[in-house]
View 1 (cartoon, rainbow, N blue to C red):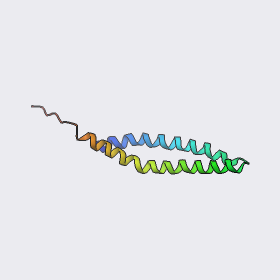
View 2 (view 1 turned 90 degrees about the vertical axis):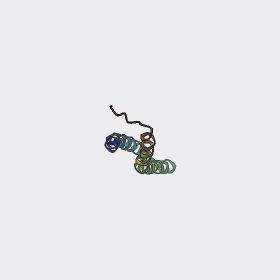
View 3 (view 1 turned 60 degrees about the vertical axis):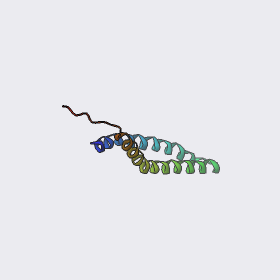
View 4 (view 1 turned 30 degrees about the vertical axis):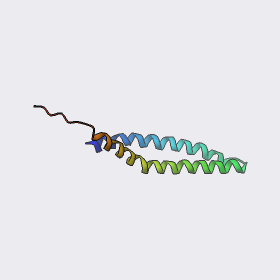
Length: 82
């Protein structure tokens, strides 16, 4: 049951991560059209950095959420009706 809730929550989380990363990449990659070489290189470096950060988020978020939920699931007590 916890897996289903985790999957449903991650679907919206990943959508937000992808949209914000695409907007940031687009903003930084615009700098590549600059005539100034240092600005163009900065745009390339920052845009690629955001793309690598997104890939890292896809790898790390499930592991972090599993650790958080595993730790909190042990504190929950099941109440049984008499």
